[in-house]
Length: 222
Image 1 (tube, rainbow, N blue to C red):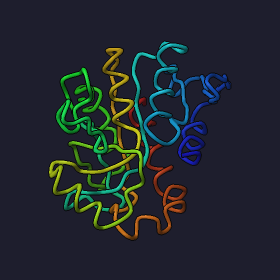
Image 2 (cartoon, one colour):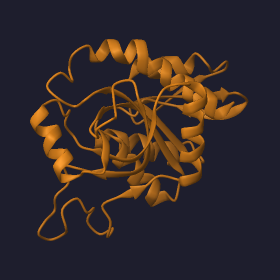
Image 3 (spheres, one colour):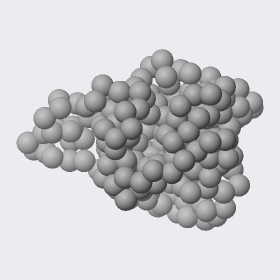
């Protein structure tokens, strides 16, 4: 979201804008480390394009993705943080040719994040947000905003391991897998992916999620 990007850019003393693929990429330094900051945009195709440009145009050595998600698992509450260990596309179904959720021609449905980078990200979240619960596990992605109790309950039944649901991470995970690039992702839980998911979403992003994302990124690179 724009609010999250603005909070990160405020930490960069020397960012300069470059345009590619209809996107604005901000190149500079954060705590002395070279970084490129960009909005993933919303949805799996948009996020995959952004990730591919980061690799091909900017030659990044790894991708860290921040954002918001809806909580699915019991105990994953609003304001909590989830660091993904793996991603799956909950709306992908090429059966009966391939098993449900399996990405065709890959032999897998789950794309793991980089263990070492994810460990560092979880540690950074714990340092940056003392007292905030930090969860680790499966996050699922799909090209729709899950905002009904019925749909979130169906996801819990189909994928009981899933901690949270969002719209981009699985696509970026697949791109990073294809390129052999380290990838880690952290999500602030903005809602419970139920009938109240749309309530005050924008305010939550502005007042809570953007600050948390920037704090975690800063702790990761400090």
